Image 1 (tube, rainbow, N blue to C red):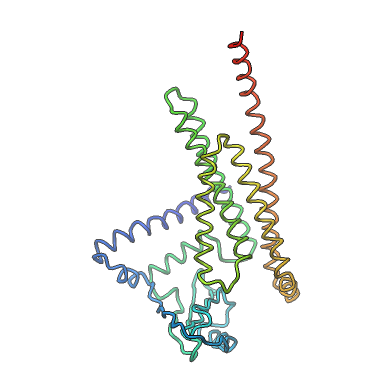
Image 2 (image 1 turned 90 degrees about the horizontal axis):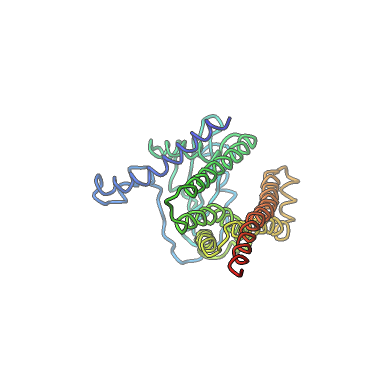
Length: 332
């Protein structure tokens, strides 16, 4: 039933990887190493204004919102970003998506200092390459249509990850039954599977929690969050390699993941609970869906951790019994 989705998911993911590979070859062969020319040809030509270092009060955002609605259409904004907040070079970026066309994005930039327009596009940056990537990204991430389809994408995405993990574990088990194999190599692959896959879950949960706890005024906040996610994932891989029993390592990582998901939910209602209630009263129930997903992920991770730990104990019991029998024979 999910096969068409898995094929589409694999294809779109492959396209992203090929883009990275071809970007390097194009930059070297066609543009003689000129990365700027390559990005311009690919449609990444939005103007970038450097930070001046001079303070500026952030006022007039409501006027810019109305101006953006008039310039790119009165559609719900998909994203609003303020670059260089509090600086004279601050820029407000508004993005929306057409409800009449699939994955057609419009974007406009304004300077806060004089409310002048610095960039506008009504059709995916007016570039065929970037427009195609936008369509591929929408198919891969499912950021279109309503919540019903998005939840379906989410569940099928988890199923795809499950297929990848089970396929990897099946290869390990098949390899272990062969005569000529390295036990050390198989242990490395098994532990790498545990740390690599479950480490992504832990890194994601840590990123969610850090996004709630780190102050919005913290300089380079986005970079800190990104580095924390990668650092957590690397630590998970190392931890899985250090632990002798993969089942124990998996249960520990899952316990930590579930705890972080639940802690994120607690942080939401502790730090901004009043604001969440006000948004719900105004009809913005989207946040409740996010909170429900957090508690679901947290509980699922903890239940899975308990199951994995029990299975690990059952699997280790026969091994311990055999070791005791061998020791008894040697003592005789």
